Image: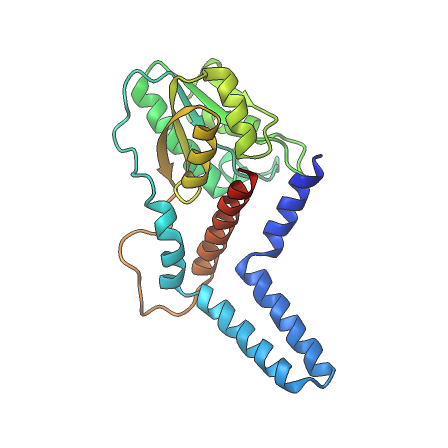
Length: 250
């Protein structure tokens, strides 16, 4: 597997808000054991405030909202579209679980939005994508195909991209299928800015269909820090890192 791809994944895992907070705490504890009390107090206090800050709903919303509002939701399905592409996400194969649980919740939401547009079109192909991952023998595209079939999509109407490991590789695969013809691009709302840039950079003509929104309505200022808010900050960090990476590549 591409060493640069693995490095990107590792850095992404290490640079999320919780990991950064934990690293700061570890450095603070090291300072404490070494007798560097002033440094230790600063790092331990800062790490606690850091984690609390990014676990607070309004802060998480502030990070996510610009990403999720970059493209409006595609409420009405456009006409004369031949393909609906659902970008891959994640899964965990387990024969003891239903397919709706083997796929990550984000993948299920994306696929449902793709099927909604596919059903409205009536005469289109549903394209699903994703490789097997680092720790799973089943490729994500085939898992999505199984779920789509379970939800009533004819298997002959599903096209799978089994090898793309990231959004750029998905764009390259889609370019071979559709050229410059418009198609519906379904992905998480926070991921759409980066995905849309990548696809248009490859010369494609995507119609953005964002879904899986995390920010809905007004921020709730009276809530305490919560895990779901920390997860939202994690998603935002990941996407901003991705946008920076794309800027570096260009």
